[in-house]
Amino acid sequence: MAVTELDSSVAGTSGQTATKRKRPKGKVRVYDHVILILGVLLMMGPIIVAFTTSTYDFVTIHREGMQLGWGGNFVETYTNVLYQEGGFTGEVTGLLMTQNSLILGIGFAVGKIVVSMLAAYAIVYFRFPLATFSFWVIFTTLLLPLEVRILPSYEVVQQLGMLNTYSGLIIPLIASATGTFFFRQFFKSVPNELMEAARIDGAGPIQFFFDILVPLSKTMMAAIFIIMFVVGWNQYLWPALMTTEEGYFTLVRGIRNIMQQMIGADIPEYNEALAMAILAMLPPALVIIIFQRMFIKGLVEQEK
Amino acid sequence: MEKAQFKSPWIPYLLLAPQMIIIAIFFLWPAAEAIRSSFYLEDPFFGNATWVGLDNYRDAVSASDYQRTVWFTVLFVAIVSLLSLALGMMLAVSADRVLRGKSSYKTLLMWVYAIAPPVAGLIGVMLFDQHIGPLVDFAAMFGWDLRIGVNYWDTGIAMIVVSTWKQVPYCFIFFLSGLQSIPTSVKEASAIDCRSENRRFWTITFPLLAPTTFFLLILNITYAMFETFGTIDQIVKDQPGNSPVTLVYKVFRDGFRGNDLGGSSAQSVILMIVVLLLTIAQFRLIERRIHYT
Image 1 (cartoon, rainbow over the protein chains, first blue to last red):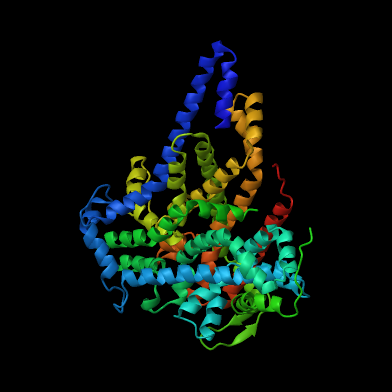
Image 2: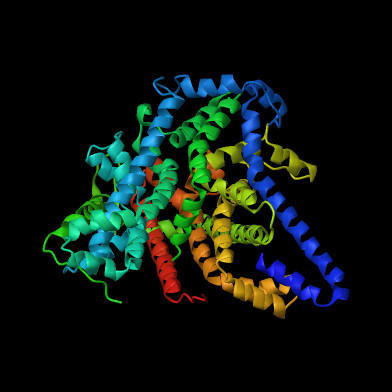
């Protein structure tokens, strides 16, 4: 904004060159729009084709390829995916998988926020002998993503008898320290005077936490919740190993089975596979779009 | 500045307990197990374990399959991280400059971040499908017979395309917020000094974005190494034998499908060291961060 205004005011000082200078500026803007429209087509194109194709019947898709249009099978395909009992044991529906995905997404986000806020509060606001040690233990979890220690993690959860349970699905994912670092950073930026004032007024550590720190962190908590919900919803490898009973499948986990069914089929049910993909992306996408500002704030804050 | 602190003999431990217990059970225990079993040869059926020292490492590293995977991973990670950086930056610079439709562009470009890697992989598999995929038809127009799952490099290219596509929005978000945090005074001063928009970008904007770029580079490398698992799993389907895979996928495959516990653990430990180096790089970078504002 400011640059453009300045450009024209500089140009305005000499009338003769003003018209000359206006032209390249116009070009730049067209160029920017072209780049952005190409970018939008590139990012949206695959999703649009996936959606439109999912409204056709699979014989048409098999014969004529992916479609850009309205196939008219929308209601039928999506009701099938949501309500038809599929899988080997026939006890899982799209609706049930959506419910499991929600449990995983919300459980993961809430668990992570609670656990990491408490830990960060201890590290920032208390002086105790093992503070530095605890910090480094938490730090080491950044070194080893779940994907790398997947086999031993699976064995531990198996030994604890937590396979095919929601707690076994959610708790091991909470082990990483990203949330703790985030809140630690935020607590450090809270002015010292607040705590001193609270202490003078006779507030203890627990009262300070609930009456001052939690209300102050509301925006941060919301931002983290949005990010962690999406991360939790999108988990794939861990649920794929952990849940062998179809009643615990999440939508993203279900994608794996859909692919395996497609390999064996004569004419794969492309439409239902794509409808599953659309259903699996819809809730996190909506959350991000609706809470866009908060989401970006939370994401970018990680860099600080 | 020293933070004012509470003193209590037990409250901090109580607060830390949930996190510490979870870390001990679901992180330290498995990690120690991975390191331990990397030195043993384990029989998957009888559970006997023999101490073999560094044999697992030697076997893993010297296998030609492993070396091929390393090269593919390096190439894959490099292309995905750099390409998504470049595309994200290009789009962010344009989105920062336009006056009309800024927020619509922003929303449309960023929301793909929400899509899970395996979901992206599934859509990619369809787009690159031999029978129904429009991208295969498109490649055929240039005389390129694109065969995913058959031809090693064609499969690799599909993985790179899908993984990059999924990461562009992430880079876009960071670059756009980086661009918007450049002070107006700096923009105005540079606009007075230099008329060429292009030159202004390379001499002023680009250096100011350098910290964001480095930060994103590390994140992109981590993404390409670990989070692409779902995408790769979808694209290789059930035939990982003749398809390119990344090191993380190989750890999983050797451990679960191949039942090679020791070899898989040794590979895990090697990856651990790579992540350790990446984390050190990241922290040194943050320490050295120059703040211009």
